[in-house]
Amino acid sequence: MDAKRFAIGTIVGGIVLFFTGYLIFELAFGSFYAANVGSASGVAREPFLQWAIAVASLAYAALIVVALGNQAGSLTIGRGALIGGIVGFLVWVTADFVIYGTTNVANLTRTMVDPVLEFVRGGLAGGAIAAVLPRPARQ
Image (cartoon, rainbow, N blue to C red; front, side, top):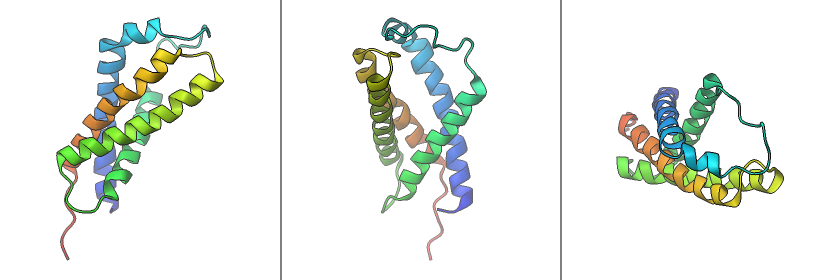
């Protein structure tokens, strides 16, 4: 994958991840997350550092772009959504269970639900990335 395709995919995916993260984790499921914390207290930053969330969204999008760029055959929006969802699920099931196993930040319910929501979020980003990636020229 060339640098232009990588940059376009990362920027579009980062924007989608940033805003869907807000919609999913703050608006739709904010009360669920607040009700399913672990015994640790005082760990939430208020207000959130939006610049740090943006950096994380770009890194997450770049990972999805790399996964999409390594696919054989044509890239459809549906295939991009599936791959993005799988990437999101696997990344977050890993991170969430490490966090659960090493800290008291979240309970087991939250640990199991979060990767499922990330499947949706990663899928939306993967579909958006697939929609905007220019197809490489045939040689």
